[in-house]
Picture 1 (cartoon, rainbow, N blue to C red):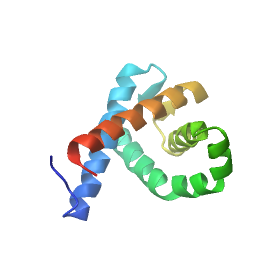
Picture 2: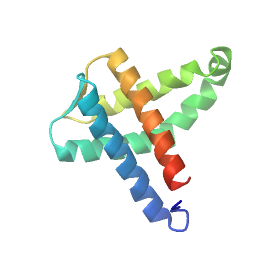
Picture 3: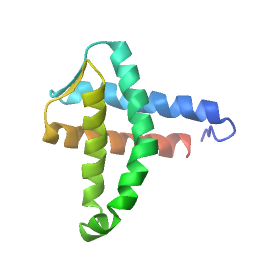
Length: 121
């Protein structure tokens, strides 16, 4: 098992690569997500990583009672919101609607979970 904990820059680049790979695979699996070019994919992955690191924790704390009430289901809505926010901000990155975003966000979460198991957290 490889871990990048010894070097924070390497860890950041590795996470960025994982998100990029997850978005790229998702664009082939789901017809409602697309990127204009490779640069759009990389920028989208970078922005999604920042949104998940900065905005998502605030939303999780603010909606904690709702998340507890729905047994964690609302966290999927937050993940979807982060993806749709990035699609709205990045020209050339499109997500066709909420449900496409929902399933893509679910796929990315599962993909990242298993990637983190392989590389260590």
